[in-house]
Amino acid sequence: MSEQITLPLKRKQQRSKRHTSPLDMARMSHQRYIVKRQAEDLENAIEYYVEAIKSSPKMAEPYYRLASLMYEKGEITLQVAIEQCKTATTLEPDNVNAHIYAGYFMSMSDDYKSAQKEFSIAIKSGVFNSARPRLFLSKLLQHEMYEEGVSIGKLAKYIYYLLSGSVLLMCDKSVIKMLMETITDNISVFSYRTLGETLEKAKMYTTAYKAYFEGMQKTEHGDVFYKKMGDLSMSQQDLMSGYEYYKKALFVKPDDRELLLKLATLIQTAFPEKLDEAIDYYNKLLEFNVENDKIYYQLGHLYLRKDDKLNAISAFKLALETNPINPYYNNSLAYAFVRAELFDDAIEYYQKAIKLNPDAEWTSIVCHALGSVYGEVKGNLEAAEATYQAGLVLDSKNYDLLLSLGDLYMVKGELDKAIRTYCDGITLDPDNFMAYAKAGLALWEKDYVEESIVSFHKSIQLNPNFDISQNNLGVVYLDGMGNPKEALGYFKNAIKLNPNYTLAYFNAGRAYQALGENTKSAEYYQMAMDLNRITNELPEDDIENRMHDLFS
Image 1: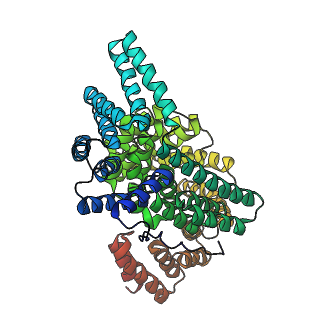
Image 2: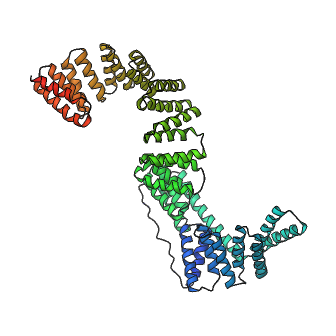
């Protein structure tokens, strides 16, 4: 976009006169994290709780709160979290929250008896501040009845703790405070987001950017508003700005699956120089364990673009483990095997993709690929022909497949079939130069000289920059019509289009030799010889013999 919006200054975490202790700072960051769910607040809360433990090691609160955050982040095991909470209950036996956290983690480890004991202690210690342990205890009783069967006593206790917990919850000041903060925060985010979206619909894009930016500054929800600015940039085809905004949003919320997917897809589409970054994002997405086969499929293609064939094969195989009957996964694995020159494996998976046949047109393209492996790599011309024919049955309008079938007939020396097949291609797409160029060569091989000239002229008319047709038409004029002067112009056109065209230099030398201009002929033969040392298109002794004949 034309207008640049800078990042706001990093949120200040300096301690005010009112909040000076590490525990106060930890509580503030923890509350912000609960409301906004942003990674920076989580990191700050953990850091300050650690400082609080160092400065006041006999205080219970930092232990159980740090345990909850570090477990959520995946930095400690469930058993370590339980031990941390037991330390807290030992330090302050009457601390209601310490027993609640201990009971919560114990219930997660399926130690329901110990969990009930902790919740019961919390209820006795909390009295009117016991809504949460009552509700937790009712949930445990419900689970116990589900496992062991319902009894009147258990049912009565379940109902009692459920109802009393629900009533007392309305008296829990901390819960009400957090609820109000969450509601206020959500309303603020909703207001700015709605304003920006309304401005977008009115096509007031610059003003919409400003609204989103102001919303981000006021609410500090970079994950929401950077994402919105990224979406707006993408809608305006400003891919670089979209990429930058998505990156900023991801910095705020590193585990946002939608952002990871957007960034990976954007890089894959528009920023090939950042493929390693896209691979990292896809690998991060695998941790969510959602649609992993599709992620492995995308990873496979990224590895192919990096020419990392082994990792590409591994990725496509992992995709197939989840969904073995997906034809596209089978086809991509086959292609990866071709790139790795493991052709027998490629044939196997191409055949599987063809058998699954999700769409006739697509399967025809796969037949083309398999036929090329049979013909060009394995030398099995009969299998190649049968596969090409099967592809044309699926899609008779596959132009490239028709031309490949014609090429196969040329290799087999079946010129009449080749000519008919190339003519079918011309009928299918009369404005495509390639079928005319190939038909011209087949007609020349069949000694249909005049027809060959017509076909090559048509190919050049449709595409004057196709150097091969220019050279081949020159050959027909030189060797078929005995007109070296006419031929020379086409050879020079081919050289002008492709200065490294060894065969065109050689043919130009032949044309000059036929015209009796031996010096010029030697000059072009020499250039052909010099290039041939690099391209290896021609037998070198053939060029040397012709140069020797010029002056013998």
